[in-house]
Structure formats: C-alpha cells, structure tokens
Image 1 (tube, helix red, strand yellow):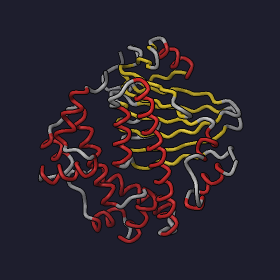
Image 2 (cartoon, rainbow, N blue to C red):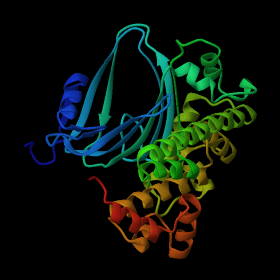
Image 3 (cartoon, rainbow, N blue to C red):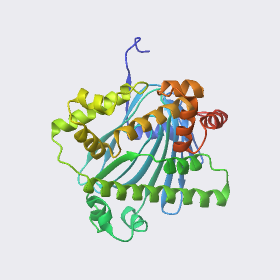
Length: 332
C-alpha cells in the first residue's frame, strides 16, 4: 500500500489490460477485474456500429499504453456522462477519426475513485458508414470532415464539445434500455443513429458560429480566456460578474465574450450554467447530496430555481433523477 497522501499510478500495456478484462468475460459483458476496480464494459455489434457501454471505476489512477500499427483506422463517437477518462471529462462528447501512417504509442488515463459512465460508438468501415449520415452541402461541416468524406482517410481529427440535453437523453435510453432480444437490438440501433445525427448536426452548428463570429486571438488572449474558465470553475457558488471576470483576466468585455465563445463554443454564462448542472448531476447520481444540498453546492439560493434549471437541461426533476439512479445503483 502506498504511503498516505501519495498518488499511485498503475501503468499497463494494452495487451495486459485486455487479458485482465477478458478473464472475467460473460457473453458480451467484460467484468472489471477485482485488482483494478469494479464495474463492467458491455459491447454489442449492431448493423455497422459497435456499441460499447463503460460503467466502472478503478482503485488507483490507471494508464493504459496502446500500440497502433501503420494503417490502423478508426472512427469513434463518445459521450462521457460521468468521470474523467482519456482527457475527456463528464459532460463532454467527442468524435475522432484517422489512420496511422507509422507505429504510434498512445496512453489512455483513467482517474481513481471516479465512476466512468460512457457510451461509445465505433463505425467500420468508417468512411463509407459516415457517408450514410452526411448528405447535402458539405460546406456546412468542418473542412476535416469534408476531406474524409471526399476520400482522404489519412486525416487525423478530434473534436470535443458539450453533451446536449438531447444527447444525454438518448445515451441514457441506451443505458437503461427496457427491451430484450430483437426489440433491444432495433431500439439500441435507433438510439445510436440518433446520437450520431445529433453530433453531426452539432459539428455543423459549431462550424457556422465559428466562421460568422471569429476574431483574431493572440496566444496571450487565449491563455487569459482559459484562466477565465478556471475562475468560473473555482467559484461556482459565487461567480464573478462578466465585468469583474474581464478585469481579473485583464481583457475587455467584448474580447472576453467573443473569445470565450470561439474557444469553448458557448457563452460565459452558458458555460457557468453547464458546469453547475453537471456538478449537481454528479452529486445527485452518486447520492452525495439531496436536492437542497446540491442546489446550494452549485450556487443556487432557491431550490425552486435550481429544480427548474435542472429540469430544463435534463428533462427530469432532480428528485426524480436522484431516486431513479439510486434505484438503478451506481457501479454494479
């Protein structure tokens, strides 16, 4: 056992990691080995889509080293609902694709004592599958996506954005699918297609906003905008006003507002609201707070106002959310 206060990181090669998981594989569910943590990964092969559901946590910080060979290709959509994994935090979604030109080594990090709850979608063969979802004017989309669809598989690309309420709802419908057998397959496939469609539309909206309102930001401006984000995160219960925030990071309000939206694809207020709701969501799902405590923890003096904001984002009252997740349990 490590001395008190010392952070221990376990590093495994991908082959070692996979062998540990496969030792306790049951049908399409791999149970997390006890020496690593608890939980499971469930994988389902749908028509053209590999659906993976991650629901686990590890005892100590974990680094897994992956070795990619020349010619390895991938297209992955991910929706991180809880926890931090591979640089993606709770409430973020991403799409990534590419083909390795030479052998590469990548590391995937999972933080200890955080429940990982994530829905992953893999498409294969990826370019041809994606063409089924993207039609019409390709100029609506980022140039990297246009190049991929036009037949250039060597472009490596990753885009990270916020999980929208519609995305979260579809992901949770996958997690808590009420059906079995053939009906389950059809239902899950439809929800995977819905998630892909929502993400592609988000890419188009992001491209539109970034081209219509883009300003030239110096590296120093970007550093100050990231500092502004940190101030927001560190002061959820008592955030500064926009003018106070601009003074703290030494930017004028206009540059802060437009630059923040350009860098993080949302407004300063929108980001504050998003982080507040995500923190409240995690407190409620983990059972660490009741509704009143969660509201207070994220800066709401009124439980009524908090409940209305929570319901608008997640489609359910916080009481109902806490109750349903308590009944489902966290990590099985």
